[in-house]
Image (cartoon, rainbow, N blue to C red; front, side, top):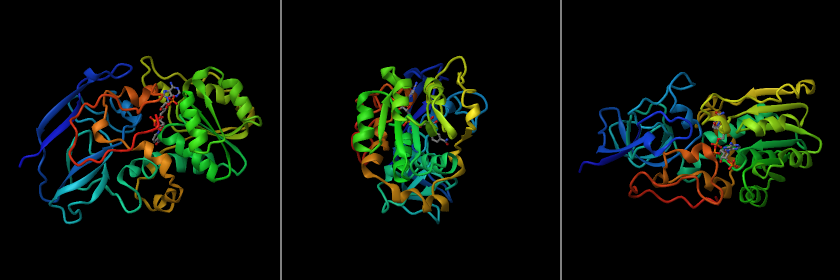
Length: 347
Ligand SMILES: NC(=O)c1ccc[n+]([C@@H]2O[C@H](COP(=O)([O-])OP(=O)(O)OC[C@H]3O[C@@H](n4cnc5c(N)ncnc54)[C@H](OP(=O)(O)O)[C@@H]3O)[C@@H](O)[C@H]2O)c1
């Protein structure tokens, strides 16, 4: 029986916020594996803010997705046919399989997923790049000491929520910045953050002062823009700023806006450094030694995305206006038989 592959392809380069017309949905016969290849059924996708930058033309840290190409996305697939000696039918693999139901691979860039350690979607969250970014960004770049104050923006997101939990495990005071009261409540009540600030309430400056009265020792920034600008005013002497990302700027049509207050921390001997999670691929020895002991089932469930929910209109990837709802909106692809549903996220 010929399998039908459902694919989401890039139809146009988005200007600002992506629209559904930027995608085309195609059905065609699924590719067959040749010698030394295997075929996976993609069961889970990771919908990441970085995908927005891959849609733009021009130089980046990875090549742009070309018009007409299947949208690039990391995911977890189950091997359904194999002509490769090292990959057996039934194995779960992590790879950049794209937004499609079936993919063929020769194993390049693919990592085995240990489903005895945690269910597959967890390997896209706390055991995937989100976890790596949080773990190495906070500990290697942020270098927090017990008792210090760690502030994280995008705190209810995939990376930010892990950062705050690791900060708590390391004996720090964890303060999250997120949009809306529901997310803030979730951070404090469910994840154990010491405080959460709703930046959308418009009192970020005074709330930061209250939550970090002695200043911010580590700022893990996922969003850039106004939030970064405000936190720069509250950095403690010797603070470290971890530049993870700038979600608030990814849809900017006139270039990214830099922080106006960037000179204010200068007398404070602040260090600012990027957090290149790509330096640590899932499955490397460093990872294997690391975050698995820090898994919190409640926290990690939120990061899985059933492929049925993949909304490559991508508004949710960067818009952040998702209070009370899961980030995925209308499903563009038909349901995939056998793909287990992911528990609903608290928002
Ligand atoms: N360094 C690396 O290698 C690496 C690896 C992975 C990810 N990242 C970066 O880490 C960051 C977070 O990624 P993620 O996967 O955690 O994303 P995510 O789960 O999608 O969360 C991002 C959150 O950012 C917030 N946001 C959106 N627009 C905003 C705005 N204008 N102002 C303030 N907050 C806004 C939204 O939450 P609210 O509703 O709370 O605003 C959104 O949920 C991204 O910048 C990404 O590029 C870096």
